[in-house]
Every structure is written in C-alpha cells, then in structure tokens.
Amino acid sequence: MDLSGPAKEYTAQEFRGIVYKNAQVQFKEFDACTFVKCTFSETAFSDCKFRDCVFKGCDLNLIGVKGCSFENTRFEDSQLIGVNWTDTTWAKNKYLKPVDFMGCILNLSTFMNLNLKKIKITKCVARDVDFTEANMTQANCTATDFSNSRFMRTNLTEADFTGATNYSIAANLNILKKTKFSLPEAMSLLYSLDIVLIE
Image (cartoon, rainbow, N blue to C red):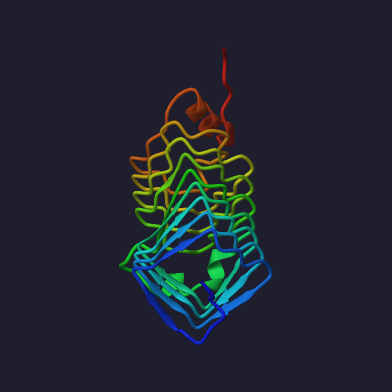
C-alpha cells in the first residue's frame, strides 16, 4: 500500500510488511488501523493523526513525529529508538491517553513535560529515556528496564514499578505517593537520601 499517494484518510485497514525508510508521510489520518511488521525507520511523519491504532513488531527507530497526534494507540513488540515525543501535539490533549507500549524498545527517547497519566510501559527496554517533569500518575511501568533513564521532578503518584529494573529515582527530587516498587530494586531509592546505611 502506498502512503505517498493522494489518499488522506485510512480507516480499519491493515498495513503488513510495508517498508518506508527515510521517507515522508504528511497530513494522513489513520483510524483503527493495524501495522504489522512494518519498517518506518527514519521516516518523518508530520501532522498525521493516529486514533485507535496498533503497531505490532514494527521498526519505528528515529521516526519524526512533528505535529502528529495520537489517541489510544498501542505499540507492541516494536522498536522506537530515538523518538522525540515532545514534537507531537500530545501535551495539548489532557483527557485521552495517547499511547501504550508493551514489549518495546524505547531507548534514547524523550517524554519531557508530557502528560503520561495512566500510560503503560510494560516489559519494555527504556534505556536513556528522559521523563523529566512528566506526569506519570498511575502509570504502569512494570517489568521494564530503565537503565540511565532520567526522572527529575516527575510525578510518580500511584505509579507501578513492580518488577522494573535499573531505575535511578531520587526520592527527594520526584513526587512519590503510593508509588509501588519491589525489592531488591527499591533499595536504590535510599541512595538519593542523605543517610548512612549499616549492613
């Protein structure tokens, strides 16, 4: 299927195995579409809308998302390395959850200042990801690897980090209220405090 054609709207369509590398996709709307094992690496999406879409096993590394909007879109077992989610219109939508990630690779991406309330980032690899000043209230971050990811002035109220690993969350620099952690990883929270641990 050719996304560079004149069609502007796609509804309930399945895109399987299509390859768009270093391409441009502009002013397209996707409603309830499914993308299976597609390659969009380094493709610049601009001013596109994704509603109720699902991406399964896709390569979305280094995609551009300038001016794009997402509503209730799910990424499963996909690679999304180096994506700057702050380029989207995400922050303007306060009520609908834009995306969920399950079993994805999100390394080197940024979610700074975004509303990530109730987002799912489960069983993912999220290394070197920036969550500075994001609202992660009630986020489900279970079983995800957060190596070298940045949490600074992040609202983690009622977020669930059960089974998550390698996170470095300073208890005095983030909002932690009824946040769920599991041992032994939760011991890392103590390292940010001005205390002396005696074994």
